[in-house]
Amino acid sequence: MTINPFVIAHRTAKITVLFIMLSVSHFAFAQDPIETGFFNNKAIYGYDTVAYFTSNKAVKGDGAFTTQWRGADWFFSSQAHLDLFKNEPEKYAPQYGGYCAYAMATGDFVGIDEDAFVIDNGKLYLNYSASVQQKWLANKAQYIEQADAQYLMQYPASK
Image (tube, rainbow, N blue to C red):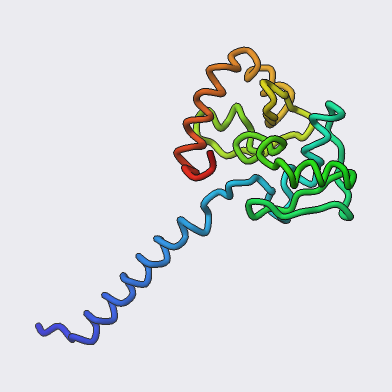
């Protein structure tokens, strides 16, 4: 029995293409450093990150006051908030790119409920839900330490 060299070359090419596709798909599904959801590029789903600090509540941003930062679109409720963010984005941006702080402690990238937030030591932490936030608050210091390490492993240049 003879093996046709064309068949071997064809199979090798198919395997090579499959390997390349699988390798590239890892990057296609890698998490963004800023949580924007699936269908748009809005950081914190379009909520004003500065308002968490100034109003102590979630406030929907306005399309008239936007900027790009770290590859995401950031929305603000006023020009004043936009200006504050542009001057000090690291001060106002949520920790872990806006992903759930509780989930990040285990290295998971989970979206958030914009109303489930805490400002601790001048940093904004968001959580998936109010019930998840209660779990996070019960051991906040440990979860922050774990989440800091996990996020830094994923995005070493982010801190």
